[in-house]
Length: 379
View (cartoon, rainbow, N blue to C red):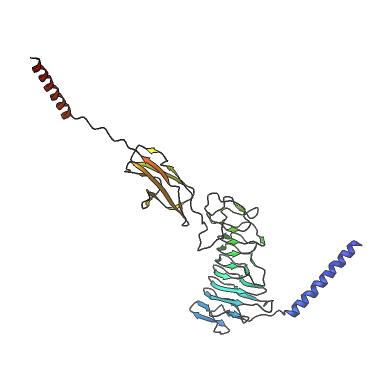
């Protein structure tokens, strides 16, 4: 009896869902925008003032708001969106086609454009090889059956998009995904893809194994990473585990920004010599330690101008008296750190005056004179 009730409830739920979908479809009819297509022979169809061609460079000249979507079928070209928007938003719903559709191409560069408000996907890349997609903004981004392709400096997210914010990669291998903001990622049947310097602001995450998540020194930023960075170089001290087969060995502690270095922490410097004590020599060794690679090193003696060094050094020709030294180090990301200022005293003993042969002779002569004088007095 309970099973019959459960089945009946399930059927009722399906009927209710079907009714809601029909109502939604009636209120928001599924429609397509016409495409402006850059065809495989390089022609633009239909002829339009919205695309300017200069050789193999095609430039979008204005925003396309509920007027056209873009399809690219031509290889060996550059499509420059000029910072414009392809907007498919419609009555709180959206047009059912793809905003920017790249299909079956080789050696294509697409850059500087935003696509939003499309039901299928804002950006769709199918069967693309050796191509580059640079500085795109889209909530839904599909990469299907595409190899040796780069997606870089793109924002795969949106505040007002109707689509789920995600990068979906299917049957795509040997691609580079670098320097992007990614809300969520779904990767299936894709191998040897490299992900580096991305900001994974994860809402949903699913991947198969066999991909790379760092370049040997830098990885990605992960919103869920809870590791620590003891040496302050901007890279986590423990890997970020992605699945049983993959890990990011060098997770970033801060959001990646190509303008702002990933490491914003000045290097830590410890002076081992000189120490705060009296030195009996006019030269003292300058020995210090740092815990990350340096691009430049210098020291200041007694507050004077910095002197560049390549590592541990010697401070020479010191006068007697009180001195102080501070070491400065710039790391590979341009952060400058300063050590504590160490004070020390130089006390080189003054040498005794030498006794010369002339001085001895004078003493001897004076002695003989005194002896003669005393003998005369005796007589």
